[in-house]
Length: 235
Image 1 (cartoon, helix red, strand yellow):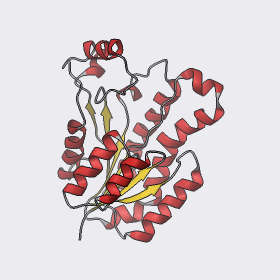
Image 2 (tube, one colour):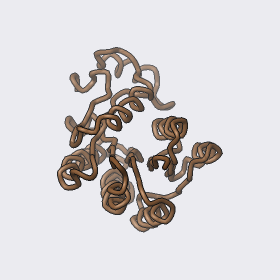
Image 3 (tube, helix red, strand yellow):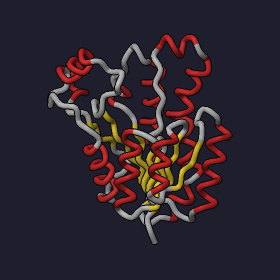
């Protein structure tokens, strides 16, 4: 039977490239998206199963869980990658933005892990990988809500690793300067790279390789790996 993966935030960047890699390696892929429909349509053309859900709505999360349960009896890999990003000014001015930060980064992963627990346990080596952040340990004062929500996800990684063992493994990846956004100007990029010991933008492949490392080492649970070129040393 083909292994089955669910990737949240699969319409762009890391989630999209990971979904393509897993499809290349024979997985059945459930590709969640909120608004990045174009990327998921490309994945669907390759055989992925697209799932739209706005994680700021708890009912949408529950509905997506029901859709997955209706279509598969096992889940080998769950990657909680979906994200939203607001600075302090935005979340201070908007209760909806503040709620979304915690819904997307903490509540949605919690509901997905608990709601899909039976499917993960049905796999030979069910694995959850939570995408946290290097700032979950050393928070930025410009993004207090975001860092707090990612810290909640990091803490849940440890708690679920204890609670779900030995049937399900739960680990985390803490990315750093993997892939700059188009809105990052040259001055910002140069400053970030200057603060990164390895002095390069990492790209997405190191993240994909870390997913494979967790997948292929069945004796790891409750672990978190920084994929950041050493930047956490300087923040």
